[in-house]
Image: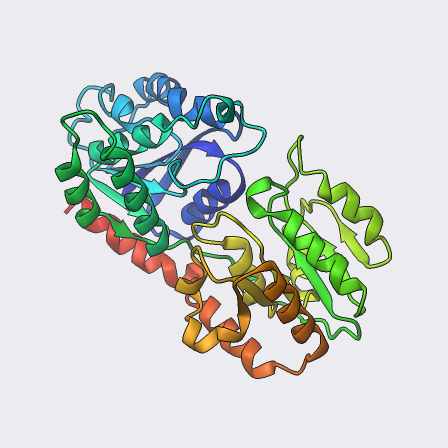
Length: 363
């Protein structure tokens, strides 16, 4: 099968997913991508560029996969002649209805503009199939969409939304195998391996570490992509935790990234947004114990009745659990159970679900 994958925001987890899907799939996948910048313009205008590119595309694909940073309705209306019956899968990495808005976003001054979420809704209606990367993501999107549609003055497409919700599927992300020789640390090593962005809530993360430092010894690894306007708490933490830091900054080399994961012991998670959590699952597969907020996608991955000791409900709870975990480090059974859970998302397993699902779309 020949598959054309259109990625309008080719960076971070989007790029990782596209590249690894191409690597592991038994089908032939060609990626056509645009740079990961100007996300609002990508949602508005990426299809203009893809339309021009596809008009010069010689071979009609068996399947088109488009991800959630483009206007699929616009693209579908302008596909090359003869492509009208090519099935299209719309893959939802994230959505713009429940994604927390940045304090730096100028839309705050005017009230949030929901039309980016409407672009995604219309894109789903234009696709032959929509897939979300987690059940949580599917649930929260349609919950927020229902609230929005109820505000419309008339002719609200509630019936269309209900049918779309019923027909949409969940196709979880795959993760790379990050298992390596695990370090045995005399002093526990804490990890941050997310983007340096507001939605990952670094303020709570570092304030918990400032508190922890008063009572216990630890070391710190901070990795992850840094934006130009990253939160100021990172600079403050680099000074206050200078004696604890053993690595600070983005890692280009994947082998070095995996080595740093395997040097780590604990991953306090403070995110306000996570529709799947690739960085968390990669760390868990490396034997890192996460400490998780009792919300977002995390209870879906780690059933609370089994992993209740990992979840917290408040900043005070986070500090309490973090101190307990760091002070009581003999937890091999917990670690092994978490690794077994993370292994379910390995690409070597997930790719079979993907390939079989792709085949049903052209049957």
